[in-house]
Image (cartoon, rainbow, N blue to C red; front, side, top):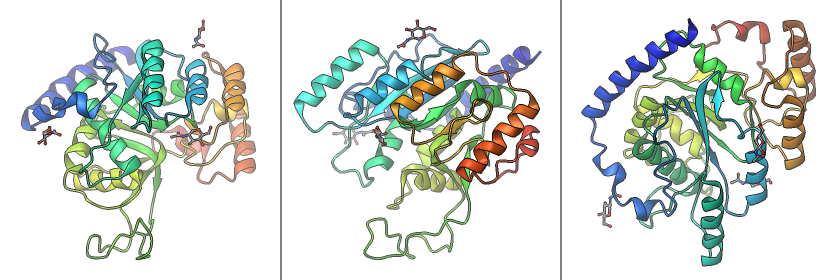
Length: 334
Ligand SMILES: *[C@@H]1O[C@H](CO)[C@@H](O)[C@H](O)[C@H]1NC(C)=O
Ligand SMILES: *[C@@H]1O[C@H](CO)[C@@H](O)[C@H](O)[C@H]1NC(C)=O
Ligand SMILES: *[C@@H]1O[C@H](CO)[C@@H](O)[C@H](O)[C@H]1NC(C)=O
């Protein structure tokens, strides 16, 4: 029944997003592709009715970290029969030798995209990379229902995230899901590189946004945020930038405490099988988690999961991780 429902949702969304697409001018999304994407990987999403695309930000030097992600949580192609894909998203390289090495790695694994910083762009570093990643999704992966953005030092529990998305009792659109940060103050220090002058942003607080370690956008939100990004010019971190764009596009974030945010959660089988993400994972930790949790996941009873969460909460001071509340779909909406 769930399968049937999801299929109906997907059909419906296809129609709706095509209508949305028709109203918007994305003709330039594929422009200058070879300039903007030295590694464009245009066939990565071809011929696949993709349910979830995970884009993993990585730096050129982090090749061993990427290999670890490849052999651990990214070594999955479907969740409950729905196709998933994991791609690494990289920025510009410093040297020709580094570029050659990157091309070779891409050739070997076929799971990389490289976005190239544009000299006259007013965006900086990670923010520009995020916008390039969203533009790549619109140009080359419009079939993906959901896009998860994360980085190579994070463990993602794909079956848990996928299960949650499949279980949403609504259409897979208008979704901006993550660990929502509330009442964050703008940087008002004039000497800081992230200084946000009141003239540019007068409000006392930043809009609510999903913490950037791991968050999910539905395909329509990818488009809305990308369109809004052309008009948002603020020297803020990438996740805040996405939050500003979402606010401009009228998309409200949805909170799930199952994203651990920037926190590293000490390993416990029943805790990790419930969480969506844990940050700051070193290579041996990713290997150890995968060896234990593996592809099939753990079979933890409700009580075991509860005690697992109590334990990992106590170990990491994770706040707001209330298992019995978030079991229902009634998680509070940011
Ligand atoms: C493509 O390149 C031309 C010339 O370099 C530039 O004017 C135009 O804005 C670029 N388009 C996009 C979408 O970046
Ligand atoms: C590269 O790996 C280190 C840990 O090995 C991590 O701290 C860093 O965030 C990674 N870089 C990126 C861009 O993810
Ligand atoms: C992925 O998992 C399969 C077994 O399910 C294994 O044969 C394969 O070697 C793994 N791939 C990598 C890159 O480790």
